[in-house]
Length: 192
Length: 225
Image 1 (cartoon, rainbow over the protein chains, first blue to last red):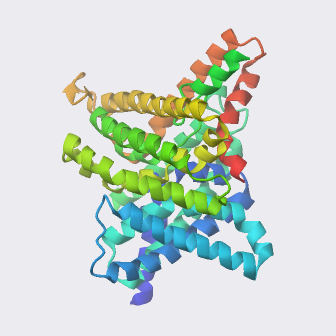
Image 2: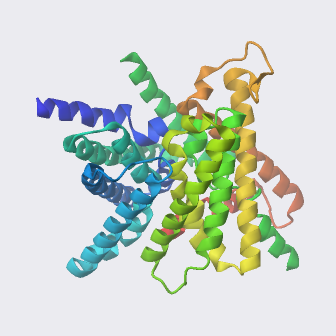
Image 3: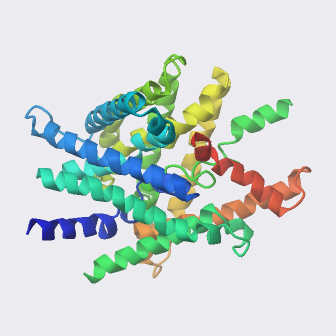
């Protein structure tokens, strides 16, 4: 039963509730990350790491009775959580694996304070209740980011090619492409 | 030489417009700006918060490591957001609820976390303040233009007043329609910029060169990597 529930929740986070395609969160980072496969993997791994770990921490913070996730004050709590994970990660990487630190340093900077990570945390606190839900949504929204970034990567070179009219080449064509992907996801949700 | 300085200050208005050219802060625009009233709310919160945050953040010593600086920038934005959110509720009432978590998310907007490091803090203070101001105004202008077109296409209204009866394309009120429309508007905007460049700038030889120069603005994020 748990496995079945996990599959459904994962499917929802990756496709029907994909943060980039259904809410536009992290779209500029995704556009940047899709330029090369290496960047795509680096940024996606870091975003998945941050959204998962911060979701878990946030679950336990949410259990504290005196903390309320009020819209005005919530960003402060999220910033503290992400900031702590960000510092901790860099600290561990520097001392445990300098090689890995050199490899992921820039991706970590870019991924930590990112719309998709913060958006994931906000949705988690607003909609989910159990530890399993927090963990699942945190992890699979990162995988959802990877999926949408990969879908963009497939078309990236064509959208930047000379076949696209000059004024629409690159960024405008990419936005239209993301819109069409988003429409496909919406159609899928509506049909269900 | 003096002219170039001015061009740099005004860059955010047209040449490196944060929304139409650089592609920053897309999420709240495509998700929530389907009417001019929503756009005004976004403009209010974004403009005041970003301007104050960037200004306050200039007092953070530059010898702090980047890791610490970026946390402090976001922390300052989170603190500044509290009173601004209160004022927004007073002015815009229940409309604030339609934005959901998109308003708090503005604390991590690229102008605070990225552009401040890559552009603003490399400038002298007065020039920086002017530049930040024009980047914000550039974003605001873009949001207004986009929202007017979107509201007109989606509901046939402008500022909730009927402008065209029968014009009601639901697609544009949704996130997917927002992406598509923003792409179309960006394309038209870029065409206008290329046209202006071709006619005003003697250094620009052809359209390809003009496009290459425009694309430089898109590479701000790339600099991080």
